[in-house]
Amino acid sequence: MPQSKVLVFARSEEEQAFARSLGATWAGDATGKPPLQANAIIDTTPAWKPVVQSLLHLKPGGRLVINAIRKEIGDQDALLDMRYKDHLWMEKEIKSVANITRNDVREFLSLAAKIPLKPEVEVYPFDRANQALTDLKHKHVKGAKVLVWR
Image 1 (cartoon, helix red, strand yellow):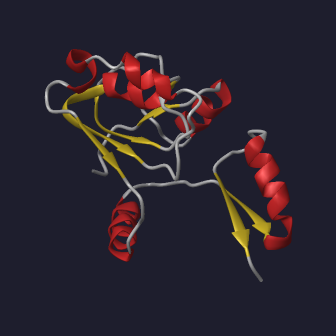
Image 2 (cartoon, one colour):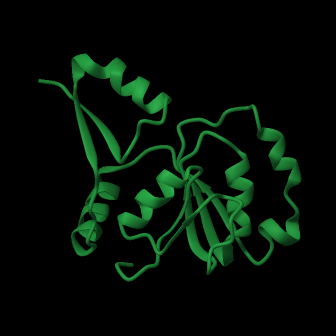
């Protein structure tokens, strides 16, 4: 896994450049054509269109994991654009993730220790939670936002 190529699908050129600066092999928007098909894709968006587009970028037998608290209904009709031959055939899988277990975290941290991860984190004191939410809403996001209770 530490030798895996990372493909990042992001809307803005700024987000794509950020992904490349963190070591992504390729970065482009969801309608772009990456140089290779993915074994696995993790979707963290609140929309359905990226789910449909992601399936086109999976290798046969690949897995799309939807890791979202909820999906919006505004574009759910994008699901009607799925064609079995293009989106699901060749044993492609779709899996949803509802919760993370302690064991999931242990496994991730063990793997992360082997990968040269360079996360960008912006820390907000808890009393600035509204500012963090505003920054997220207006895409003033580079890396993760973390609230700290002191």
